Image 1: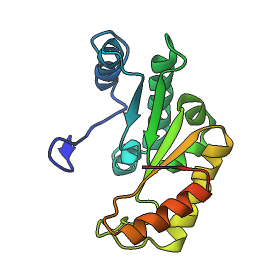
Image 2: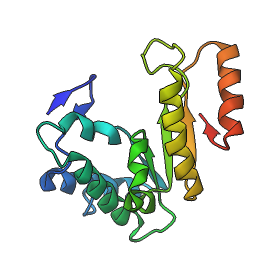
Image 3: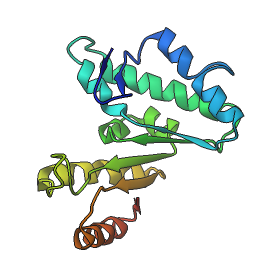
Length: 169
C-alpha cells in the first residue's frame, strides 16, 4: 500500500480481507454509512486498478468484481441506496458495472487533466464523452466535476456539459 496524497492510499482492492472492511457486515464502512442514515456512497478512484496492472494482470476484472459486489451489498436491503462511481469511465463497457452503479461522475472532463487547469486534448475529451454517453444511454446519471476558477471557462464548461444532458458539479 502506498499513498498518492495525504490520507489517500492505493490498496489491493481485490484482497478479500480489505473488502470485508468495506462491505459485508454492520461494522464495515458501508454498514456504518447506512446506519448513520446516508442514502448513498461515492466510490472515488475506481480507476486505481490501472496502477496495479503489473502486479495483478487481472486488476480490471477484479475491479469489476469489486464494484459488482459492492453494488449488490449496497442495494441488498435498499434498492434506492445510491452507488456513484467516479472516473474509470472505461468500466461502463462492462454491463455488470452498469448494473451495479446508479451514476458515474467524471472529474476534469474538459479541463485540468494536466492538474494545471489547461484545456484537455480533444482525443481525451471525445473518448470520455463516448463512455459517459454510454452510461447515460444505460439509464445512469452522469455528473461532471470541473475545478475552474475562471468564470468564463466555468460558464462555457457548464453549457457544454448541460448540452450533453449531464449534471454539472
